[in-house]
Image (cartoon, rainbow, N blue to C red; front, side, top):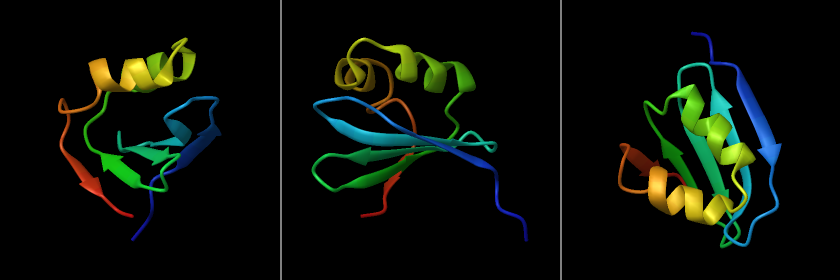
Length: 74
């Protein structure tokens, strides 16, 4: 069994500590609260837009939250 390649990036945000994106279109979000969520079937353009958004929290709330299936890991 092979694992998808993962690209982790620390971000400056009042909501997020870091983000990672895998080659199978899974987005992992580490929140400053300590929570870790995995979002499925996230297009690469959404990940790229999150990285370049002036406010990661606003972008998350408008474009990711409640739009993709997810799983809380921690």
